[in-house]
Image 1 (cartoon, helix red, strand yellow):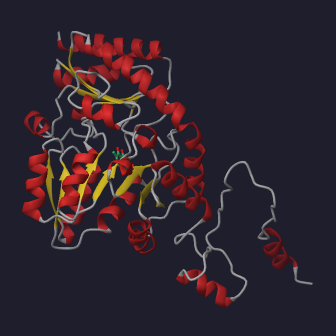
Image 2 (image 1 turned 45 degrees about the vertical axis):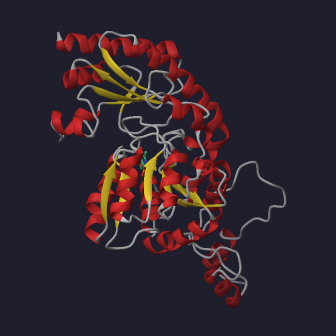
Image 3 (image 1 turned 90 degrees about the horizontal axis):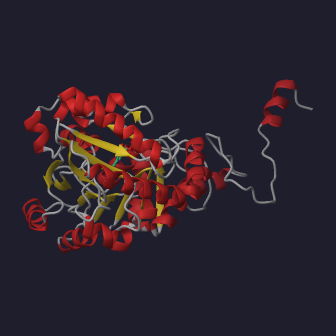
Amino acid sequence: MARFTTRAILASTRSPEVRQIPSAVPIYQAAAFSSATAAELGDVLTGATPGYAYSRIDNPTTAALAEAVAELEGAEAGLAFASGMAAIHAAIVSVVRAGQTIVVTQAVYGTTRDLLVRVLAGLGVTTEFVDPTDFAAVDAAMVRTGSPLLYVETISNPTIIVSDISALAGIAHRHGAPLLVDNTFASPYACRPIEYGADLVMHSATKYLSGHADVLAGVVVGSRERVDALRPLLVDAGGALAPLAAFLVLRGLPTLALRMERHSETALELAAWLAGQNQVERVHYPGLPSDPGHDVASRQLDVFGGMFAFELAGGREAGQAFLDAMQISERTASLGAFRTITSHPASTTHRQLDAAALRASGIAPGLLRCSVGLEDVEDLREDFELGLAAAEAATR
Ligand SMILES: Cc1ncc(COP(=O)(O)O)c(C=O)c1O
């Protein structure tokens, strides 16, 4: 009989045999998986036999998440990553090569912009930013650059511009390029870009997919061929998702529809109310008939989503005062969670920009971005009333 420590090791790593199906996907919290023979391990590692060998390469819990998101998006295959940025990085790098210029929406998440202008530019990939609603400009940029891809967001961060995915997919495909879409703000409940011609769809699963602000994760979905081309970027660059994180995102998915319905209903009510307030110059929400994105959104989105932005007449000072007065909404930078989050780009994420530079990025100094949570709408309206009163007092 083996000695104590050996017995402790063997006894504590023996997996239970489970013939019944668990009600939740188990957390396969293991770095590695052993094979019955050396030959089997070789086959698993080379992909000749399906199976698991090492969790950076593949893990049952993270694979279950990737497959679930692929199914919800109507895609053939998916891969999960450690964060939305790891997913976006892999998706772009799977298509582009050094020396090429890519065409990307100017209404893009700030860190995606940083990835392009700080990281990829250093590796010989340049970016041309375009207005995604100006199809002639997008087409001209694709011709001028010979870009191997076109990159947009379904609903943009932070300016809530809706991209017409069918039209943009048509332009990209005419130039032989795939359309890459960051679908984080919409979620697959509101929009499934593949139905409109997108080729790769990326998510920060940190947001609506998980919905509980307790995990970082990313997913890319698309055709099996395109997702297979992403695999080396996962395995060799190492941005693999931890099994516990995958479990937490999986736990969010059953309630995604309910949450998105409630987020959308509350966002529409608050956006319409804000549009009628004196100090509010403009509300950006595709659910409002007055919004420039309303027609595209009505065709492409099943619900208008939980994200809106609004511009206060009092500029930067008013924006900051509004945010500081809020009692229910969180002052932070994330989004897509059960709790309302309001951010003031001019004094936080974009505070290095002066008024002119802010306008050039489409961000008014008094712009506030709100991720509407699941709280009672009356309480949120009262919180916004506090904000408006403080904004007025600050600029009187
Ligand atoms: C639209 C969008 N895409 C991608 C990301 C990056 O996701 P993560 O923070 O999970 O890396 C974010 C984060 O805020 C985002 O808003």
